[in-house]
Image (cartoon, rainbow, N blue to C red; front, side, top):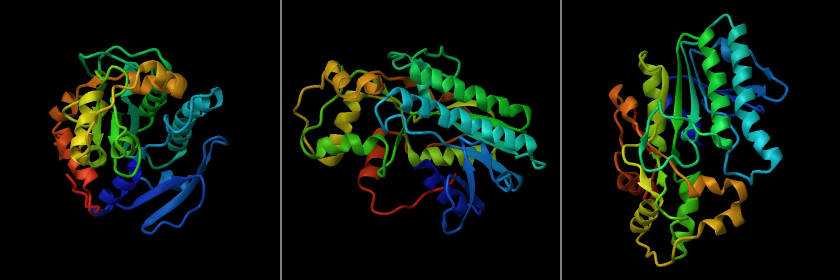
Length: 299
């Protein structure tokens, strides 16, 4: 989802984009190379011809219930893909100018409270936090062989095409929307276009290395977020909050993703010079929920 938007922005800027995929595909304007994370195989040419690598691969954490096998897939898809890229870069005669990788704000724990957390804040010890720690550990190893490495701890990505937003919108459209749990848990969000522009910013600016929170300026509580979506859609909210125990019955262990939250600071990336296109939740929702056409701005 993020890669699709990033590709369009990069192509608008004149970059040539290649994909790594599990299968050969014909995609207009994009060269596709194959890799197999489980077998640890990759078409080495993909690395030999790359000036920059943007690593976004990882099984969706909300795509399925967290069975033991799916939890393993969530972890392996991130750790093994990073390991495969590390080995391919190590072998390559061409070392990329930068390795830019996704991570997640889940590293701070499923609920870090109402205080702002930054890149130096304590890390959590729940499932997603442990996955993210292993993910970043593998990425940081790339520093041994690559000129520059940057990690982006991504919040809730808002897109009209997938992710969390359509799942929030659907019940509100049918007059069944409600805040979840206490509604006081923070949602640190980012518009998909700003996230893609942030990766472009990191490609263009050599001073961008290390770890950055990739979230917007104004985290919102779940209740504030739900009300903002309803207002944008012109729909009423009249149902009480969905109790936490109901969410646990419905979602199992992964209920922590919606009953907890993180209030995440973006001060570091802002101080580096990055400027957001969508500074408020209202601006982001108006753009995404009233989107007539795809038109992305570069930095």
